[in-house]
Image (tube, rainbow, N blue to C red; front, side, top):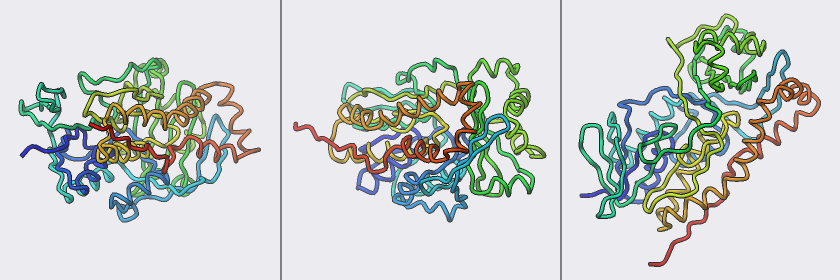
Amino acid sequence: MQDEVLIVGGGVAGCAAAISLARSGRTVTLIEREPTPRHKVCGEFLSGEALDDLSALGIDVASLGAVPIDHVRLAAARRAAEAPLPFPAASLTRKTLDTALIAEAIAVGVSVKRGRGVQSLRRTTANLWQATLDDGTTCQAPTAFLATGKHDLRGHARPNDPKQWVAFKMYYRLTAAQTADLKGASELTLYSGGYGGIQPVEGGITNFCCVVQRRYFAKAGLSWKSLITNMQQDCPHLAMRLAGADPLLAKPITVTHIPYGYLRHTTEDGLYCIGDQAAVIPSFTGDGISIALYTARCAAAAYLAAEPAPVFQPRLRSVMLPQMRLAVVAANGLNNPLARAVLPFCLRVWPGVMRVTARLTRIAQHAAVAPQAVAG
């Protein structure tokens, strides 16, 4: 029997869509290239919106060891300022979260194919979406969801990244004193050419995830060791935080081609694009997981309401556009040398600006992308 929906990508967005559709009685096949969940380049911040969506999907993050986050701290050079978050938040590794989501998808009846890469996804003459896998086999369905995250699929590529961002992820075990000082905080550290986020995750470890422009990485000789040294020189607060820390990975996880600010305009009939394939918000907002869940929820609702994908996709874009524009402007400001110098001082005077920015750069949890069915 042919499934009704084919989902390419088993990360947060793909699993969330699969769970929602399967619970609504649809037959779903989900294809994930990794044989088991793994660590990914991700800040691993769960905003209030993300926590609500995960709860609705049956994921209890507290039972998975999620660490509560209640304030944000901004550090540039030797200055730092903090403010309480205007919403509940938590931190959880993507490996743990993805494991729970895949398990829930299987539990609700999704057919999951793991360890299978998709070589192509195309529309057949029979108006079916056909995925050709790396072993030569194919899967077909009338409807497909594209949820490949930061990795583009041939024939469905997003625009080039003009600033050539490179992202890195490393786990550390901090000293006892630094662990205590970081408790409950998500820290944003600024340096020339980029920024990074550091926060505790489950198991008593700390996630450091950063993005830099390739020219900054090139100045470090394309070496992680030199890069992290340069970042600590730019931001002594980061050097203080990592003093005596033990790196827990042999080398950082890395990803390139991150088109920040991207919002998909259109799509083909029967192809719903979600997660990073729909929108890529600057990392400093901590909204990546929330957007993955939000776009998956909206796309599943649109499909179930018989709203065509070419109608849904631009509607989703219009809802997300104001927050995306503000996030891009704020991210550009963080890369301005003057802003890096004065922003921590200004936040000491007016910490409320941080709370306002946190609110305005969130994708509104209840901002409805109202499905519009088209009469046949």
